[in-house]
Amino acid sequence: MKKVITYGTFDLLHYGHINLLRRAKEQGDYLIVALSTDEFNWNQKQKKCYFSYEERKMLLEAIRYVDLVIPEENWEQKISDVQEFKVDTFVMGNDWEGKFDFLKDYCQVVYLPRTPEISTTQIKKDLGK
Ligand code: C2G
Image 1: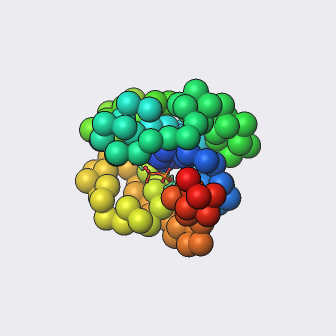
Image 2: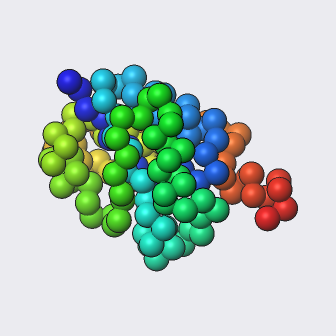
Image 3: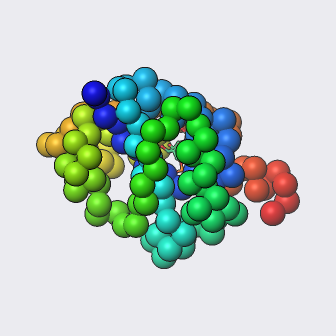
């Protein structure tokens, strides 16, 4: 079984996220999503989520491409995650191009083109938040 992992906040889940998750799953047979916790978002990513971790987790678990959701609690857990879950491929959108190349010592690293016209920030702006 070829295992894939990706990381993110996935707040206000939208079709750009789904495009990413669909293509990530195409890289293997089993997709793990490491979902940023509320604390990690607030303290390390300066992101205030609209939906809580539990709500975001429930949404992701309802997606056919997603096989397992685990918490992302810090920037440093990726190598141990790849080793613990025996991951073959790490996938991220190409806004992170090159940022995780250190993982190439442990697994394949794939950056996929983002869906350009949509973002959680844009949704909030459009809704006047
Ligand atoms: N994404 C995308 N197209 C968009 C928006 C997002 O392909 N229009 C991708 C991002 O590139 C990322 C994933 O969807 O791979 C999740 O996006 P975010 O929730 O914004 O993730 P981010 O805050 O970048 O967190 O340790 C890594 C971080 O947790 C990544």
